[in-house]
Length: 285
Ligand code: NDP
Image 1 (cartoon, rainbow, N blue to C red):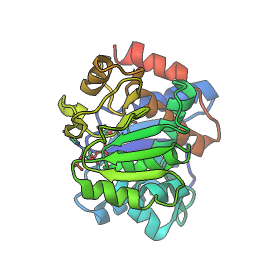
Image 2: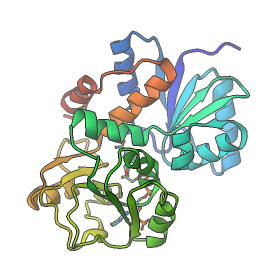
Image 3: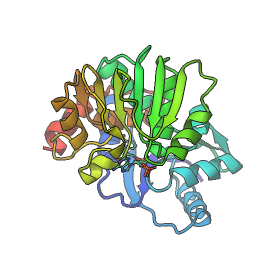
Image 4: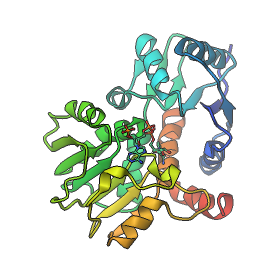
């Protein structure tokens, strides 16, 4: 069996995914010849999911992006039998799989690198020596926290409704040389410089319930959620009305994490800016 340059994003639901568009754009930009599909994969348990991954490998896929709800199962399967990148190990979730051979798959997590790339290189916001507030302690927060800490913020407060999840997430990072706390509500006495909303509240048109008393004055405010209609999210509207220095939704993170996956597979780093513009003006408008 020969490996073809065939890739896919797998998840359920998947019809909304723009990953095929993004990877085709990257391929055109870098001169790589590939096909990239969005495949709906419905699995009741981890064993079913493992069997489906093995089938996709046998069908000739060279790599897969993994999205909701399978990132944790992908992590567990690869951890048990194959290899994990350090950032996937720290995140506890896999969003990029490379099929090197039947015996050797590599699981990676590019969410954190994508977020940091978008914030630092594209938006040119500071992370180093900031007081950072991360709202949420689900899979997305877990995926990005190691990459954010690697940028040496002064302090990080992870705030979650279910405080046990915030505390479990932060206890792994007590050695990082920055003050990292897990809280149930924001610290209203603290001036946060960078506020990242990693909750899913915006999907329900709600503000996170944990931000009571929070000030956005002079803070950079980022929402990982993005709107396909091109309008702002509830959280970013709140931030703008409350004096934020600048705001951004998570579309750039989506494109940048895809660029990191593309680099894993093809060893060519695409430019995210053109693709981001195309998505905003042609696909979502
Ligand atoms: P999870 O379901 O794992 O976690 C959801 C988180 O949101 C939990 O911390 C939950 O708190 C919190 N939450 C939900 N509703 C509220 C609310 N009303 N008030 C306060 N907290 C709330 O989801 P993920 O972590 O995987 O994803 C989070 C978001 O990030 C999603 O909307 C997703 O679209 C986005 N995302 C964007 C990416 C991008 O590339 N732009 C990449 C990955 C994710 P609790 O634990 O207490 O229930």
